[in-house]
Image (cartoon, rainbow over all chains, first blue to last red; front, side, top):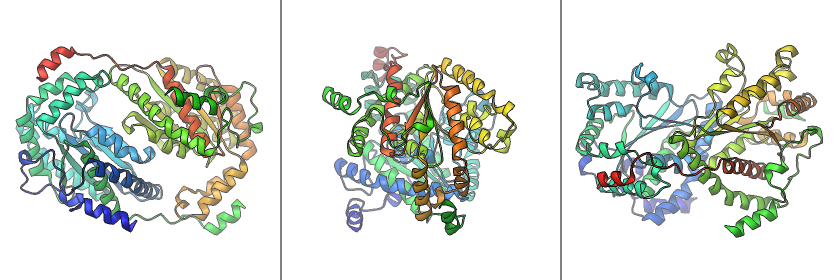
Length: 287
Length: 287
């Protein structure tokens, strides 16, 4: 254990939680999407470390769940934002896939349904918040309402403009109710997106992941960059900070999110909940 | 592949789907809960085979999901029933845990909430049915309404008695709508349950799984056996058959459920969905 921690310390020169924390004056256009901030290992070392860390994440998740079952209201919410093909689904599959499905509340947010459109944009978000003891995962989120909505003028500026503050207030409320929020913006380069879209068009087992709309959205790259920049400028709060994650290297993105979740869970000082019954009495009853 | 199929054939002398299918005249009290019907390997061989089969299950699940995303309405529903400690949660964790969490709709059914009580007993069940392309998992299910409800006379016999037929009709409707139902009754021995409950009382990391009510329920063992027998006699239909799974050996139960799911998915003749766009046009647009 001490040995593996030492090895980990050599690979992570700066802990992920520090290395990836979005700076106040960050310029998203300047980020190297192929970088591995804080980590000096290669893909092989990263994959090996991920395999080593998965049981740790899984053990922490079980403790969170155990506490949730025992009256603790705390939960964790992982918010994943990123351009098409940035690897949100892969993180769900490979990172969240390492923990017990019973302890996961997963939701993905696409174009609002007719019912959703009849409500405030946070309505569907509130409905999908993780239950006590769960790790919630949002594949896209309320941030769509200041990203795609802003880029395409789906509502006028005087409607989306106040949303940054609304979102900050909403997230404060969620955090105050006991849910730690981990917001991750996955950043891929335009070239990498090209290659990933192309792969989807070249492999019949990937056609289902391709959507012609993705190429249309790609045409709005600078507008999206601007919208992401505004999102980071306006919603990178102390209670729900953004992590800016270079995502051209899938192995790094998965390892980094694993570390962020482990850090979050470790910060919760989870212990096994005490029995809410008298152990001796129950042992006698059981016989 | 051919080699591994041959090895598998030697371990499974009868395919799980046949060996575990509840016979029409089955006597649940006669079942050897420590048996491994159809399988002649030991724990080590079983664990090795499970590790080998997980990628197969995961690949099939991805195809099911891909089709669901492409307009196919089919889904799979795994129904898990069994006495406390029978291993339902372990199956979710270890079998369902092998597939992409995005493709799983998990629900567990405990004592009905106040809201649920205001509705028909199938209301909460219908609400939790898997979406297109998903594997749904019910940890307990509508069968509670002919098990615990019957054992404790929570409603009079003239209320629970018609439920067997209602459930058959309901499941027919679900199957006709495209969801394959795999019903698994996990059977543990009373001795094994004793040991598992005792372990929960002896290990602080397991206290949270212990509920004093489990010992009370244990006192109704013969009544539960009778209720399980009636459930098998009355709801073991051609469209939604029961599998009777000896569950004293956790490794066997997990392997067996994996095989049942693989069989079900293979029977669906899943292929990658064709593109719903013109590939050449899109390649040109992408550039």
